Image (cartoon, rainbow, N blue to C red; front, side, top):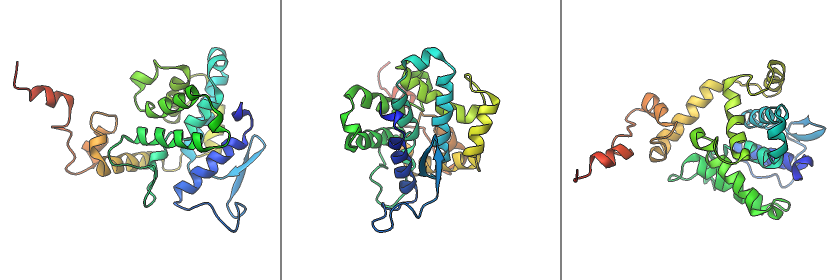
Length: 240
């Protein structure tokens, strides 16, 4: 499996770091000029996107503590989906990921699928595995659905939740602290609020009746879901 060859994940982390900085891949100086760190013996770029690394590592620990899940969850699908789950937070000019008419989870799922299909190893994946990555990313904000989907989809949702919950699902306090030490939650609360309100302000129609709506209602002046909700459609019906 590709995830047992961690360079695949190094490529993902590198790509994410460049996307976050709105920089193209360097054409002259190579990758040597960027800070790096070693994970499991593999040198990777020291990505500023600590959140996605925490989600992946905490989720991996969760799986390792659950023999049943460890035996049925595809670790590579889980790794790729966990690492790529927030791609739509890309604010670079002329982003090829961000759209105004898709939920951020859907934009991220589409970008992840494109990345896998374009990769020389990923394009050999069975379509079912690609679909699992798409579903895991697209549904990670809908736990009332995701937790009842395939084990990989549910595992990614739980992995993301672990970043907020603290030690849980078998992950010990010591393990949790080690992950936080390697990838600290610097200004995490403020960053979550800033990013969610940016989404509510920038593409509000994609946030109504989602977990993002309360952030818009609290932090974005003039934001209102009224008239855009399912109940508004029903109440506006002329019959009955």
